[in-house]
Image (cartoon, rainbow over the protein chains, first blue to last red):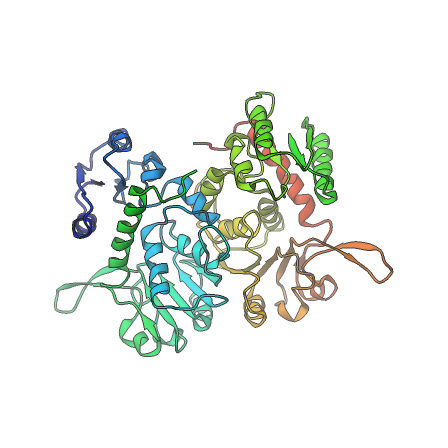
Length: 264
Length: 264
């Protein structure tokens, strides 16, 4: 069950894609559209109704919410057992200590890509660009930690870079990296000279730019053309991490429906 | 109010130091000693009594607890509003998204040292050795994150190293670091050749070793003699981070008593 506040075209598109995927895998889903003038109390009231509705297994509120609404209060209003986005404070806490929980979908999608392509992470150098609480940070939490935990970590050495990492330092770290994960929305942040041959590059960025002929297209953080010649693995934008995010939302919803997340 | 399970001499000593500090600053404190055969239910029963006792502002359970007891269940039994160690899952979640909360005392002590000595962190390279959930990870969470958050981050680029970081990679990262924080319990992990002149080295390790003359002494992770000649700042062991941990416990207890932690 998705809650969409306002008319942002990107948010609408994301929610549409999630609905299509749900239908495809056989999950009944519905979107509740709320006007962007809705109050925080009204959103939370809708969430509470869904919390109490036993026919609803998973709830997500498409972010961002309008500025007059506290994203944190909204995320914390969702029943942690139905929190398929993994943004509730209890689920963030569990993730940070590697307990079994709902993991934010984009982070889970990145991890799943690494696993499916059998990219080695044990003792490897990973650079993560971007420290957002629902993408960069969860990826860092999963990649650096101990494989013996309840929710197994991937045992990598992780460097977390962000807007205040100087360019030369980012280059220094990136050149040594076995895996680069970029989630910044900065177009062409990762250039061919920054990448070690054989590296695995995962591009989580997605930015809409206007090309010379006036058309719009979606691009990532990575200079794909050049970097793809050096890296051994690289994800395209669009069509890379995006669909994985949607797939992992289906996974989390299935987990919620079957009561498989270990909710204390 | 401290709960001490069993007779571990180091734990006893730590609790004693905390009691002395409490008395020194004017906090009434008491230790409840439980035998190491105590059940998890009995410990949690004691915690619940303290949760419900309005004369108690702060509760800590000295870790480690015996193997038959779940550390996680014990930490989560403490009322988050009295959780002066900051180990409750809700407080870990808040820390991970930089909300105001009780921050684990050792991590807070390290941050306070950096602040008091005016060590610059903005855009600086930090290497953290050790990924424990109550020391290495909270330090990483505080150092890498955004200064504009409710609980302000320190805007550093953070590399999190651990037992599976190969030695040559650790050296690679350490040599570039402006700040090295080591919390591993590996004696002589940080050697002079790994440290950049002008670096700040914070030694959180504490290990009891036997010297040639048969006596015991406490040492950290850093080869102090050599490293102190190269680093601009270095903390000794004992007498560096240890007392800061105790001081920060007093700070957290004061915060709990005054209701200053923003508990949602």
